Image (tube, rainbow, N blue to C red; front, side):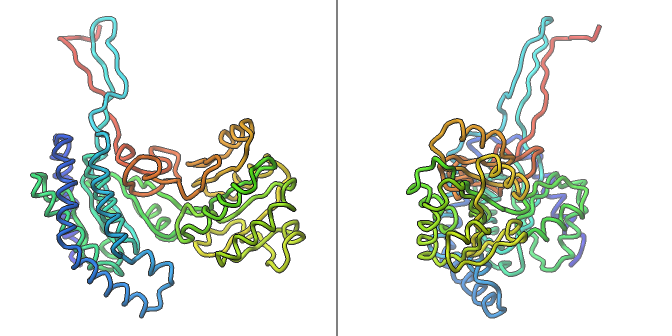
Length: 417
């Protein structure tokens, strides 16, 4: 690939970002709706092109989980459209006065939300990231450079071109959305060098990809490594509710980052609830691996090893550990967890508050499925990912998380004395 092409894209995105700063909320919302309409007009083409790429991935022996992430069917397509339209209905994250005051001599000081600028998205297999990322970036006044995986290049390009058409129809700069159309690692390497033009990178994919991006650039990176998510069933939990929450946390979609990977069960309810859990997980074809205490209660399950506590399976496998109280549960989560999503099932307010305060995770859920940690269920509309970082953005990264702020001061000839 001509390395000048990536530099040209970065320059064009930087110029578009400067233009987007001055756009009105109504103009950006109109663009989002036009993007959805434009996508709807090419639906059949998208489904056909995607089906061919899915078939090719299957022929190449890609995993079932990867193929599922790659697939766009009617339901997924409608979801993608709904996210664009939903984001258009969200409150404007820009030009909010975050704080302000007038000092004793009449100087008006305020802190105002503004876009980050140019956002580069590097991702694998999920074509819905193409639309989600574009929606979140445009809503927050940022320009976006998309670089998806080669396995979905034709699908992603078709989606991007349709959205660009919608942006232009709404009167916004055409380079507000751009996609790198080349395959191979060279284009990514060039993008990582564009710190003069690109303000933030967001990698979406496996830990290896994220690590390579974070270590290979001077551009700030919003990242999410593992999703090693836990659910702790406390000794006072409603056992029927606990089983339902555990099953939903694991089984609703096993290949996603907020699916439960380790279940912690308090020793005081273990003998009663573990057989209930085994029956429920067996009916969902989940392989169970347990600690020594778990194996004493449940027959014919594998022993969990040190590697299991550290594993993000993204598969129908679940490790179970019996713990001696909430303190041991919190200790286990903070040691082995990835800071993504962790939950507790309890009827006690004190336990819920202790868990919420002491578990060091981006999302902590009380009596709710871990699968609920995300933009849609948090009322954010579409999100660009879930960050396990602590600085700038943490948890679901929606439009507000892709803003920063500037200080704006109004005076009347004020001088420093």
